[in-house]
Length: 142
Image (cartoon, rainbow, N blue to C red; front, side, top):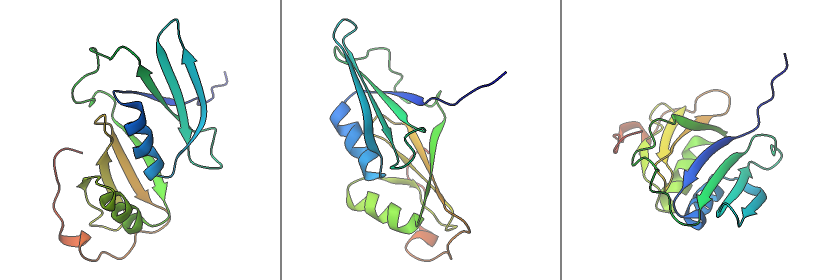
């Protein structure tokens, strides 16, 4: 039996705000599907050159009363980054809270506007720990 990964889906409450967050991570829109009958929009976003690994943002036009408040039933999305310190600084400079800072030079967690946990992992070997990251505490849940 063959199996092929397709995508990970997360529901979003504000499509533009969520897309802006994933764009900060470096993802780009690869395709979009608008369904007037079902009154929803699907936006697929992926890292450049990795269009086969998208996250699907599902936006219900009439709101989504069924969206859990914490989204923890989902787990997390994970992305490998070239320089975890640079990525975390870029996110912080754009108003994103670093929930679990990269104290070890290897791993960090942030949350999307819809409370989806995003794990960031350093490509290759961990970077040498240094400030401000090494002594930065956790903020909220990750």
